[in-house]
Image (cartoon, rainbow, N blue to C red; front, side, top):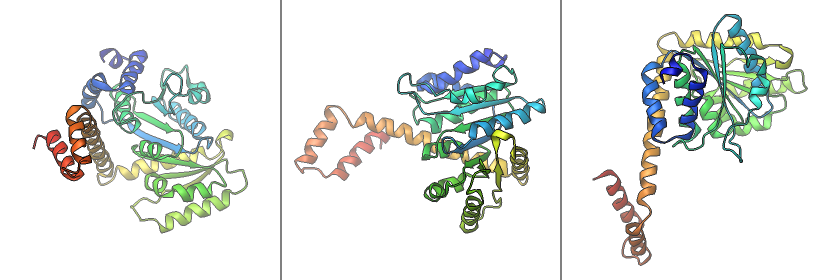
Length: 308
């Protein structure tokens, strides 16, 4: 831990690997980094594969580095079926920053963390926060519930879509609109950008107001068009959150959710342990013989788990 605090990039990478692998060592890292965090500002970027998230993240990194600000990128990717590691496509797309000591880019996949990426990611962010990175960008691949949950755990969440993505937006709008603070239509030089913007505006019109209406921005990230507006929107949202204690409230709500998830995962693990072995088999036999009903049997298991 001390090596990471002293600026050893390899030590930082090893700490994140420990978190990926889970278990007691991961909890020890979490306990060590938690008191040192709370200063980094996190930006989540999510959207369908190929939407242009990494290119947009690359542009944001460039703007931060122009200001002399250090930044870390956590690319949450699917696990490789061979090694359990993360796909490294993000590093290829952001390779222009690979030799910049002010930029730390890490691909991340969960290999054993209790609770998966949804719980491993906040712990990895705290590692980066604890070593002094003032900005952390979290990029997720895909728009499944896990990816949306991970990106939505940021201070500012950017949802990237492409023209003609209306059907997918319709199918996923509940999760995406709940977490989106900024909506970006990338590859806006393609046909369908106007219709996609109209659909998103309609969805925002009928959604529950929450004080901040996500701006809908059009970009062509590969050409460097529109990324300045995205950066301005990130800064505007940060300024909005800094008023009236909104940022503190958002972070407190995230911690409450994380705590509940940790408790649920621990209870699930304990329940799984109790639902095996000779005593459980005897209980199951009693249910099959109809001497005990499943609810009463479950009460016995829960009582054993909680000590009541």
